[in-house]
Image 1 (tube, helix red, strand yellow):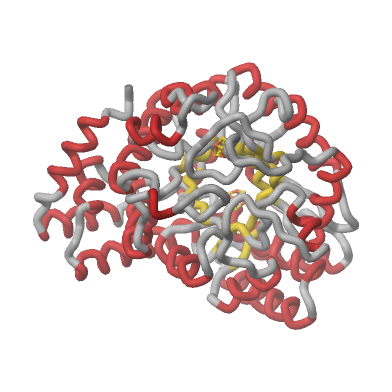
Image 2 (cartoon, rainbow, N blue to C red):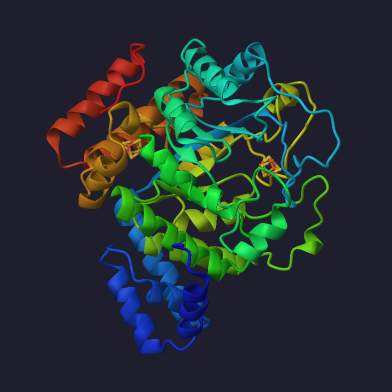
Length: 458
Ligand code: SF4
Ligand code: SF4
């Protein structure tokens, strides 16, 4: 197995011995943005020296800025079914929790999507529990079709990333044909003994079947896969090294590793007592995890959800996070219920601001909020995408696309002050771009958007 537990333990032991000079060398190497070795990652994970730690955050921030500039991609989750046959110890949807389970009808999905579109969202993460009878693959496919076909005046969902349980090559092929963006699946924990305890007697009990899901997805032709760990289940240092081993396995087998990595932290949920989890991460350790992932895989997006509060999201954006969700509801039918003043959630969220509040906050923090979904629609996925990312070519597309989507968002959903703020930023950023044809694309784009054209991208 490519997550060799003994090797991880040994690397972590070795890492404790790294000298100050060695750490400085590792950080120098990291600045070249070519990633670092497992041994180096282990040394950074074991770092205790506060001064060097500060330097590590600085390097992670520099890497992030040089690759992603000021852009932050926005998305929202859509929960469509809480039926689940599994009993994951850490989850509110587990089978042994008794509550009125439901799955959305296609009409209800339309209603949820229209609300999300009214909030300005263009990119969704589709979420549901595992239940082959109540929510089979055909239900997922039908729902995807409904989502892509549901439009409001100017609103449409342009990319749906899908987070469904590990499944067969045949089912992954169906997802691929349904035009999904990234296939997302969290290993939850790479530490097998912990995995076994957390997933008793259920479809999710096989560590290997879950671990090899991306191999099957890629075999089926899905090129963008997003990994992750539920931080708090096991030792975070073990998890980060294992994530990197998983990434390398995919690179070796399929030429491309994770498109994104998500960093959810365990939260309070129905029937989950946090005191029973001895590996919960402090904020400090969590930030270290984000920074080290950024250094280790510079070209992989890092996703942070509204599980984290404003302060953590601010810090994490500085050191590595590239995508955040906004205005999220984590309950089935939650967007409509929220409009009606009720709330149902799978787990507790911490950032409850609306998308427009998050967008204005990002603008005030100096970021360019982006609703861009261009790449997969242009066929820039998998190895092609990574090639463009690693040579820096992608930046020529990300920046103008981000500016176009920001302007579009401001015109459709912003008040006067947001519109002014956004347009000022778009003009200023366009001025800084050396390439004349890209500058022209942006300037012409602003005019076209004001004339009513939408969805302008390269
Ligand atoms: Fe079901 Fe997923 Fe929750 Fe496990 S984590 S109980 S599979 S919804
Ligand atoms: Fe993402 Fe591609 Fe858009 Fe850049 S151009 S923000 S990589 S979708």
